[in-house]
Length: 174
Image (cartoon, rainbow, N blue to C red):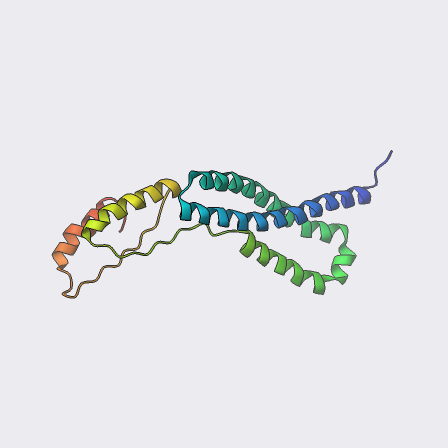
């Protein structure tokens, strides 16, 4: 049996586009499911939701990576295997590809962030820093923004020696 290169390229394209239809659809649903499970984890503080989220995040990452790979080569296959079709339908296909790319970017890439806003006095900060250390253990690294205000203003020497200098010594600020 002899295989025609045109038939082989069409079989390959069918394989690629089939996976590219399935994988992004899966990742859009998985992103929503993971977001719900993460919300349940934060609301209930139950370990089972963290384990479920971790498991599905790994599957999401694999599916997302494969979806990207199939999505990158698919337009090239259309251009090389169906060049006359691509040329004739360019005014219709190009906006659809752009829409698909933007939709994939905004729907399939979930923002996995935690944002906390609170006011604390000196005594409450010790508990808050322990909680933020726990968050850093979970995330690997966290960003902290601190805003302080005083009706009487700040003593520049105390601010420099007691706040800025220790933060510079630990390379947290420049």
